[in-house]
Image (cartoon, rainbow, N blue to C red; front, side, top):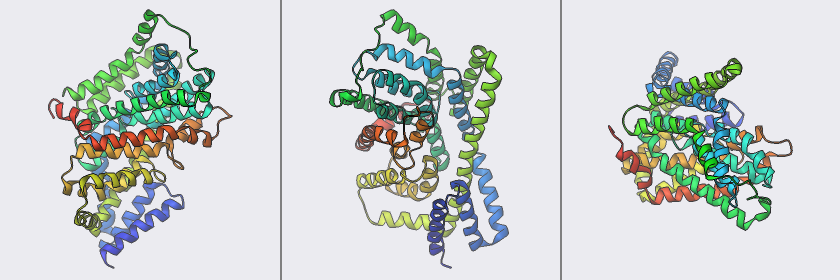
Length: 440
């Protein structure tokens, strides 16, 4: 059989397996191994698959992923998320839309100790959404803010998605992590502006907003001091990586060790139950990610054997599209794909196809990576997959439906599209900080 035709059949088979409900990691591995058997035979295929999986998952940078995940669960168990929200609510709670803005900024701050959007969305849906409802926020908006705000946690370091992108593409993990800071802050500003705008255009959604109690300047600054754990972790991760003191794995190890020791001292009575749940959740999430990456490495090897990825790249380059038009098309493609696949699966499947094209066009790989991650993040709140929405729904009040939260995220999805447009039009936003790194 012609190798090109075999590659096309492999892609079709993959989507058929996904439609029938097979796990994405298993589907990728099965199609990859099956395709290689058709090309080189049974024994060589198994040998190639096993070595490919081993060398991909043995990458040193991947140690960062379980450490970042552990950080998020340790921070949640230690009550850091609550302290951050209380502090920020004291500062902006009396402003129109203030409680919602405090939630968005809290999600950003908490993102400095967790690389998972899903964890951030779930934690703040449990903490902040009931608080917003007390101040008259419509349930759709309250949970929509939490589900959307969780996205920021996957942009600013520590970001699991940036680490995965770096491992799959061969780019610098440190540069990609640092590159997400400015886009993450832009998204925070746009989300906060969205809440503020809704407060004026749709006051019925925030009926008693601005009625939070007043606090003195002393109380406000004291609340910020209680969030010292966040500042410490942010300095270790951002300052350490940016300053060339730590590589990303070392920074994650230091920060997670700090949070672990802190939990021992602050939650000593409940420490066994907390650590058991924390480590089990970390192991479960990490295993899922590694299963997808292992399957994707086998599938990618199969595509390389067929020559399909290079043929695809040559075809796109031959169309002579402008770089701006190409990046817009790819962004729209990722946004649409996010309606059907999760973030990690999208990266694992598409990088072998698209990155050779980006290299041929000589685009800045850091800028492109940030645009891709932001576009993929839109899928976290896009129906019908929308993992952040499901995460918020899992901890929501009983009167809240899944449809309510999907309705609540729409204004913020528009804000994400605006953020993507800004990043495309102004590449320097993504590349300025990586270019200033020490030891880069």
